[in-house]
Image (cartoon, rainbow over all chains, first blue to last red; front, side, top):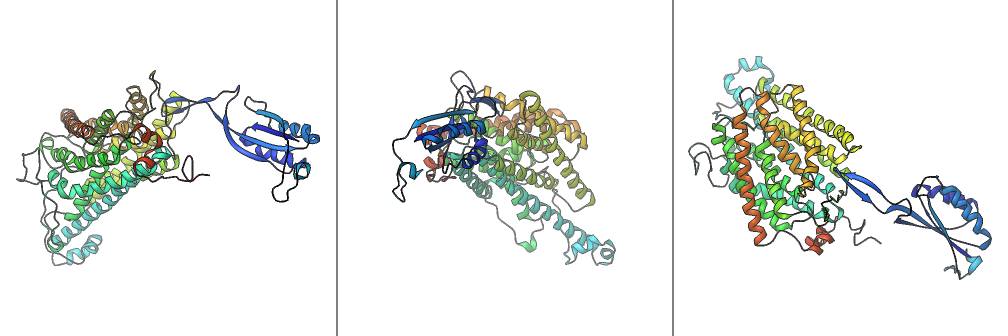
Length: 112
Length: 448
């Protein structure tokens, strides 16, 4: 099992969700986050004074999938979240030792 | 508000006054046509005061919403508390002391033409309320809401960093003493009125007075913590709710028709009714020109339209036309209002350069545009020359700034004006009044 964590542009969420659902991936956790990467922040003007917005709003998606699903999940997220402009985000993959479904007590692949 | 109407005794009463005015033929057949006409005028004058008065009263709501939208979420409940409290205090102070200090009447001055008399207002028996061509209560109410407007101006500038009680004590002094004394010099027929100064509805008497008190308060109080960086950079603190700020501005714009229109003080003749209507037209278009000039200048200088500057532009246009909304031709009202909008765009950053922190832009809107509006009266009103206008602006400026400074310094030295650093950073909703405006949003305590 792998945990796939993706930081994406907020307005891309629905396309990513639909695409993962089409792959048969049944679940996702989304968190509103702020951060910066190579894009850095940007500047805004309020009442004649310019100020820097260093942390930009992004969404963090977390999906746990079986090893066999890892590549196509990454591919789907990468394809759907991409605009080609700076600030599209990143995808991280890490290992997951164990998964338990709380209601039934099922574990690992059955719990996904 | 011009000088008060000449005292006019009202003759015999008639139950059909309004009908008689609408149908002159009937009046000619009535036993006392002159009496009927006077009573009709009394009714219409009073109606103008009452309607103008409740429109200006509603400006208190406009200020409250504008300020609630322009402060950060952690200070919204505090700002609303200050607004409902200051409006109430203004009324009580104007009843106990303010009104008679401002309108002492002939022979009642403590210092002739400079300081009126001190006594609470009383209301006459309605059946014999005939001393003026309008009812006593309607006049008091109309004057009182102007006083409250001056206090509202101060609260916006000093937002987010002044404790509740010292602010409210300042409001007592402003509404009970400072505002009425300078008001008596002009509207109470004191020395400025004698020398030919003219301020129709209060660009100087109401708006600049509030503006001076706010400016001195902002200097004594200092900026919000974190507003200015060590190298002089300005760190904006965007307001919490632009929709509320916009609603507040529209409410103020609406209220201004009472503020300027009813300052004609009479609506019992064709000439007066037409004047009130012309004032509405000029007032509306000056505000519109203030907005348009502010958004065009913002686009040119900053590459975007700043909503908060557009809102300030409307108010600056309104303040600019307030000193003389009747004599300008429409195009002149448009020019006067447009300059007001430009004043906002250029003086908001100027105040920041001077490190004077004005949260809502009240100093540019009410003080700077108020000065502009008062001086420019001489352009359109042939009966007014520029010298007394300048004297009035300077005299009232010195008096209000100096007396405000004394009060602010006294409060700072005694009970203190500012909360602790931790309390200010936590937000005054929690630290000062223990009530959050938005407990379930942002960093509110009830948010999961």
